[in-house]
Amino acid sequence: MAETKNVTYGSIMHDLKAGKYLPLYYLHGEEAYYIDKICDYIAEHALAPEERDFNQTILFGSDVTASQVADAARRYPMMAARQVVIVKEAQNIKNTDALEKYFKQPLASTVLVMCHKNGKIDGRKREYTKAIQQAGILFESQKLRERDLPPFIENYLKERQTSIDPKSEQLIADSIGADLSRLTSELDKLILSLPADDKRVTPQIVEDQIGVSKDFNGFELRDAIVNRNVYKANQIINYFDKNPKAGSIYSFLPMLFNYFQNLMIAFYAPQRQSQEGVAAWLELRSPWAAKDYMTGMRNYTGSKVMQILGKLREIDAKSKGLDNPNTPPGELMKELIFYILH
Image (cartoon, one colour):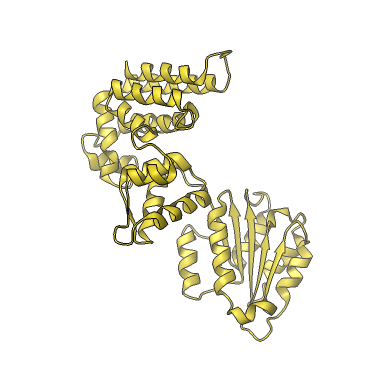
């Protein structure tokens, strides 16, 4: 089966839940979460519990050779329709010639799952990649971008009959970041904390359970900057300066750069007067998400946005010690906010 653009985590899981198993699943990429989810599902569902003792093998790439993996995959199942061979840490297998040979003639009764984390297959191994695609699925598990975290949170909770408002989504995304394993663990804890008759996540619940202030956080700082609310922005910056764990220049610099970069792009939208037009231009998930960019275009000129982007780069460099012998992060934060708002 050749890899196509339609090979996604969702499409793979759809087929697995329908009982459609292929001879090979080569899972690689920077995001371990999706690799683990696919691998765990196959381990738990491809065989009946009583079939696993003789028909499920788990190997580790650092402990086996490609030949040993190929030999395990060529075994026939015992009193079952299939066998499952899972190779964890597959990136540690050095010489893959024997695997490539197996991929070209895989055993139909074997489901081989290769878990290659923290990186991708060497792009120079074209024949190896081609053999994988012909045998089954080649899936790259990519890190989510920051802007994709809120919809991921919303969908994850929705699948578990729990609702959440946009502010709470952003609070969680800003606080936890793109580590999906940690993120889903925190979301599971939130769900357990909710009463059975009210499955709603609110900013107050996020503050209570995750420890993110609903009034002084990156979301509120961004909102104050978008609306050019000088008093509120300085309140939050001063709070961060006194409570470094609540927020720091290292956490909100990427957030602000992303906003002003998108705002610069929004100025070139063919239908910049329309919320729907700006949302489509920026590839946002809904017209509602364009609201802050409509406000930003009213409060900032294009030339000012260009200057802000330059200042963000300057402050980012200074925060890493470049041309900055002794200015502390708190002072850099204040310098940046003053520049943006005046």
